[in-house]
Image 1 (cartoon, rainbow, N blue to C red):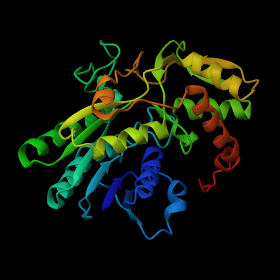
Image 2 (image 1 turned 180 degrees about the vertical axis):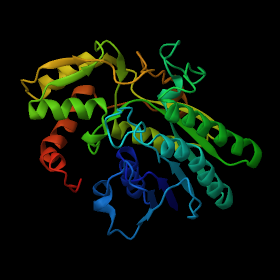
Image 3 (image 1 turned 120 degrees about the vertical axis):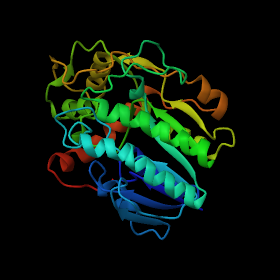
Length: 326
């Protein structure tokens, strides 16, 4: 069996490649390295069951596979990050729209199962809390974040269209905030930012008043949910939230990370960097529990300790601009 992982050199994609290979599945990784890192897959490059295709998934290509995972999209909303979707708005919109079309065509040609990595951001500034899969969202369709939010919504729509018209076996997951080793500190996500700042003694920067909430899932828990989603016989044509329902404020995360790093960093507040930033985000994972028998297992403190340990080892190389083997 062979899997095609689009975006396989990214944070989540590279962990997924590891899991698939551990399950005895050969992997073809497709990545154009806008946000993915060669170092994330360096340990796989000499394996006979791993291949790399450097390619933009929005452009035509073919690679036979039994399982197809679409993770090829920048994810960070940080406008200052060179790897965020706000730094590459057109490429992001095309990866989730035209890229979805290209990968669905491959799935149709080869009879593959197809999993699309959607996002909690399709819920926008939620009027329902926590967010269930039946909630249609409150998204600004032409705002600065729409290149990501709306293209993910389109990715879901075209996947279900292929399911209905061509009977392609599609599965949709809506990923909530995820953290762990290999999350590039340059991509602007909240946990890498806070950990990097705490370890270097820089001020820990909180945007807004810090009262906005997020629910953080450790990457190994997320990958377990992805594995169960793609292997289940009950999830064809379905959408499932994957995330940790334990909700905390951004300010609570900042203070906890500072304590776990034993850091003297000051917490400072800055104006919000982007419009339409959701004030609350928490998944309802009832469906994941019922369909997949899945819920997060890694406690927040334990996950943060493992993440901090990884940054302690790699941060000097990362800050020096090198590409450490991860």
